[in-house]
Length: 236
Image 1 (tube, one colour):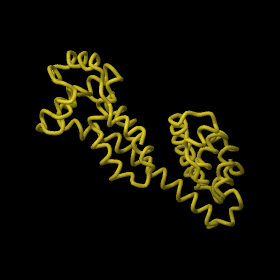
Image 2 (cartoon, helix red, strand yellow; image 1 turned 30 degrees about the vertical axis):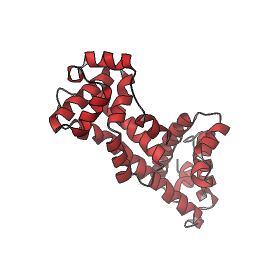
Image 3 (cartoon, rainbow, N blue to C red; image 1 turned 120 degrees about the horizontal axis):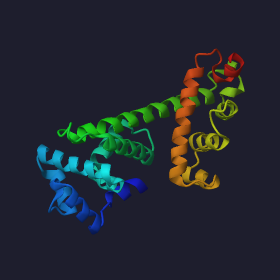
Image 4 (cartoon, rainbow, N blue to C red; image 1 turned 90 degrees about the vertical axis):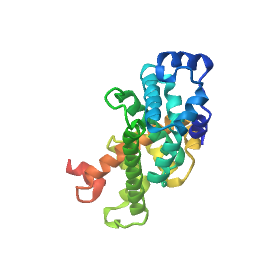
């Protein structure tokens, strides 16, 4: 769990924390670990004040996001366990962490000073649920193809045929189709396939997620045509 372990161990440098405590009055005279302790033990008003201050730090210095994510890691873990048990944990944490960053940079602390944690979690939770829905659709279509439910549609409904069709339609690049096919169908690990494609793990993970989203949207759009995606070009 590279991301999870990184967040668990996140600690700003003394210089960073000194600068941030001078910037945000709510953090003044607090050591980093004392701030973390108060977030676990203080009352709701103080927790909102501290989280709001950290959000302001993120908006002025993106380097502070690691602190925010570390502070909210228990809540992120809970949302992943609750909403995304079917996803790879590393992938799920990446999705929800990205959503948290998006929520933090948009958050208006002055307009919404209360229930900060709950409001910050709304967007990443939606992102996580969407990722789960896409994952389920992908698995359902892959099982549909493998089980041969739609024999009448011909070989295009095999997983390999689906990927080839998506490449032909310009929906997926060849390396994206391989990322999906090899990791989701063949069962190879993402780091292994990423290495063969000359991609860093994080880059491969992001490309696969974006590619699966495009593929799912294309599939669902084309499902309205008789015979599925294989007949899309003929209907165009």
